[in-house]
Image (cartoon, rainbow, N blue to C red):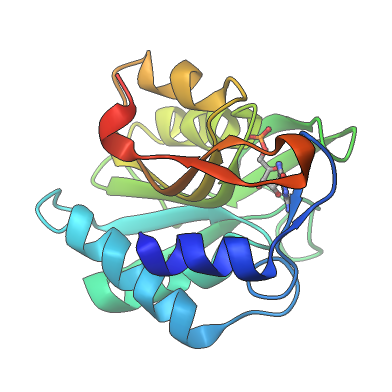
Length: 195
Ligand code: 5GP
């Protein structure tokens, strides 16, 4: 997605060879027209997949998931990282380790919102080591729901998450795939270069 690549080059900050900061449009301040374009792109790619629900994880997955849900006309559920006072039981839970934040969160989703009748699209902001997506997949399995695929805004192709998920035969659609962040430079992999 050209528009997203341009935004990453223009506004992204390479913090290290491993980490890209995109606080100006995705992770803190949010750019609504860009999110709309991202939602439309996910919706176009998955329009024939029979999606009934979108599942993401708080907080940065919510904006792109919400825009895709608006275009596809389906509800968006976000897995919570902290137990809420009103979300006590009747939950699917999974463990997610974040290498970036060096912490493990127990994520949870109410059993009311995903059932075996659903066909679910997973959406997240970044795909790095794949732990967040694996946690969401675990929840979809517990719900015995059908998985349509995974939509990612920015995949770091030099980290193992993408191959880990694709190796399982799961469809992953990443709108920007970063080949490298070396020397403070962002370089992209085009999707047709993926095997
Ligand atoms: P994973 O579970 O695939 O290792 O990482 C996914 C989560 O880690 C994302 O949802 C995102 O919050 C965070 N993350 C991983 N790498 C980066 C990065 O380079 N930049 C930012 N801003 N977040 C990242």
